[in-house]
Image: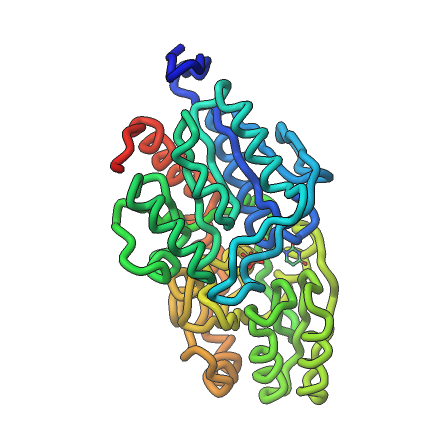
Length: 375
Ligand code: UDP
């Protein structure tokens, strides 16, 4: 037990285990898909930490559901996603924000925890960091989007570089001169949920939120050019955008198959010849890339953002000049050159839950043992 100011902290460590308080994304309830890849990332990290004997509690918006996790839900209005904002967007909170309620709950519960891990890409958690008595670590889930977020993230890095982690170096670089002491953790998935499929059908896959930053139109353009078939899975975030893409390429053989739970998604994804990853933004990581690899599906991705640090060009897929439809079409034609077992093997060695768990645990122990602030 330690005493800081007038607050008594009961966060003594039993053995080596840590008491971890995870703060989820405020843009949607866990399990709805609104949180995008963050939902899976949070769940997988929580599982990895629990398997290692750490205690995890998650604070999340109401109606959040995650099996086998201690979740405290709070009510309030959801935040607008950062990626729909302009670069000079002001910081905005709705009346009775769920984000405020989540961080108020974290403030009250901190005496029972060793460390807070924030998954929200929002200004308030970074701003609040120095006001907490226990260390607040942040896993930044997107690249630079607004000036206000850049400023508050860089401020947090200046105080405590080791507390701010990214998924990839490319993502970190979008914020400018980020020191090497900020770790890049990649990501991990439960590989037992993904089956290796050796013999694919004659179709390609595209998986992601149906949203402009995900660049579905380029995948559809390349599919139209090659005459191949494409199945699209993911949250229908912007139906107008989907309609526009369909109108622009009426000849493309494209079907939308909805938003599926992981088990069903991986079953169908695994049967595809290849996976197209065509983001227009710097994808911080791109969970769907490693999900495809786990099923043995080669990935054709733009040489941009997270996927460019994941895909091994010519071995587990192809990296293509960003925004080049021609490049995509050429890579699509070369699908049979990739040995699907290489894809599964890469997922096993680099992106399993234990591999990710090692990286995250090392990081959190470093944060916990380094409580002093630079500023
Ligand atoms: N996803 C899903 N069902 C679907 C389509 C997507 O569960 O039908 C999940 C997918 O498995 C991944 C997430 O949605 O975990 C998308 O994450 P990603 O990092 O690729 O993109 P984000 O939406 O975070 O930008």
